[in-house]
Length: 485
Ligand code: SF4
Ligand code: FE
Image: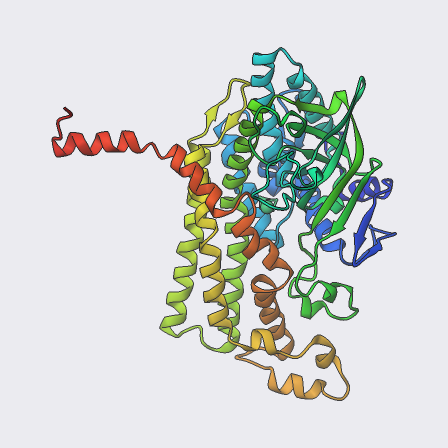
């Protein structure tokens, strides 16, 4: 069974005994909790769409290990075409959900692990590559959702990793070594989609140095392993999901992303699931390759959500009766070119991909970082223009309960109408704008655009490294006729 149905996926989650908290209380029934459902609906789409003939080419791939048809989110890229389809798939899913659909982290981590473990084995004679290959084949065959854990809480950023000046657990690390595995302590922050995943893959937060061997640890564990606690992050307007009769107020009542602070309190990891264990010189490669893939991903997912934002702006312009104003048309064009630039960079970084020693394909790191650096900017301008077009009513409109009220409902219906549109549909369009700009989708569209896959400074460091300024100086010198002494 290499492809699960969404119903089988939900059943598989139901069988897990997970430790999830929100607002200080354990969520006893994660399957039916209204806060967790929109996240799961995004993930369900990744299963449902794999069975739709019109999306099969993007949603599925053929495994080079088993020859089976698998979900593309668990694919190891065999060529540049796979890299290209990955970005197209992400744009499609962003368009479909208007949210972070949360399944890409494993695709990006798995490909980083695949090539890096090969190179670790080459240097140290370890057997991480075969272990990881067995793991990814299991993910493919069982069609698992795997969350990825990168970012440590860090505490005081000026303190040394593993130093005595702050709690060592602020960076996840090995606290006990046993013949059959290791025990780890620590936490990982803002783990996308983790409350609806089966497993989590963990890697170091950054490059490590000699002396930090206990922190250079990478592994996978099921999310119902003893010692794992997920504490769901607050999102603005999140409790609207828990109100009855507030679908309009949600703006996007079906889909949404979720993140959680995830604590690893003395979690045992068997040897079979360890893919880096003290080889400090490879922690940086693992992080850099994962970040490269994920920065390429943002050219797809964020342009897909951007399409929804542009659509919402165009729709509300129609409803406000402003669609023919030249400044509105100009703003929509500006939003579109900003959005397509992100896609261009995503596709370009795939098209310039290269084959790793392990045989899978890596994206072009310079172009992927340029892509993500623009993602830290363009969605903000797109949202600003969308808010401009929508008008202030986007954040001051009455609720669905008022619309349905026997007492004030008639007023809402009378005064919220627009151009050829009733109050209800106009409110729906306005709330979608609010959701994308300030509501739960803003986590995945605005702030995630800034900080997801690394904050802008991380991209600038990579661009500095990959920019090849010496080669560019040589070009300038040649044309200027500069003769070196
Ligand atoms: Fe996928 Fe984008 Fe969400 Fe990352 S931010 S998991 S690439 S949708
Ligand atoms: Fe993300």
